[in-house]
Image (cartoon, rainbow, N blue to C red; front, side, top):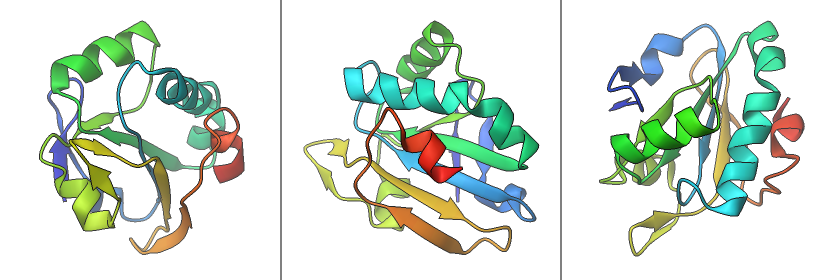
Length: 130
């Protein structure tokens, strides 16, 4: 699987083999809960790096929206463009009216889903995943 990030770079899940990956899905850039969650992952970024864990945010917003969102909140990790909801459908994330549910997946270094977080509290979720 691959998708463009907020900078237009192609990010491939397969390139992350050998390390754990957090893929967190969220409904929309700039909304209060989504901003709180993204900033919580940002604030925990050094701990994720120390643990050799890659973080990907995913939403149905455009690259331009992601770029503005990531710049405004100084997000150090890729935010993937999923306007056609390919990633959401592949992961089984519920979608409705162009939006997607807030769900996080922890993928182990072998590329297998190790844990699913279906009910997320945006403010403390990053710490919960760590």
